[in-house]
Length: 178
Image 1 (cartoon, rainbow, N blue to C red):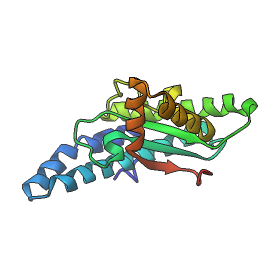
Image 2 (image 1 turned 180 degrees about the vertical axis):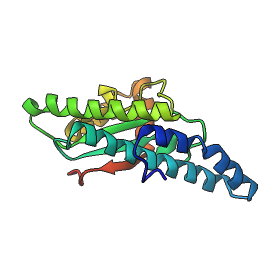
Image 3 (image 1 turned 180 degrees about the horizontal axis):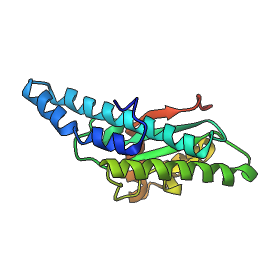
């Protein structure tokens, strides 16, 4: 149903039925690990659909990118009540191009994160979301950020460093160079 949905409102209505699905799974004796994976699979489908909606509205991305889920979604351990933790990594571009490329991905992620919030995936209190410029960067900038987290190791850096390791790529336009 999510795959064939044509609007955010349709997806909101589909997701509102998720508690009934979870109740049925639990009543049938499903293991908790399987239930959280199913909840995450629904979320994955929604994220992919929203990214495609955003691309339809904004036009094709200027470069290859990955939309990455972090935290409980990245671990495939989501529950019915969960917040968003996500980021965008986009291909390296020249310094002159970075501003406009980043602007495109911030617009895309603003749409996706807002739609996710409307669907019941609340905003992250710590703002670990792709719509936050701190979590939407080129591969080179992410490498530098990672290096700083490791070398500086301030308390906030440690928290973000830990979040970074619970990741799962949800959507990509192409393989990002390493």
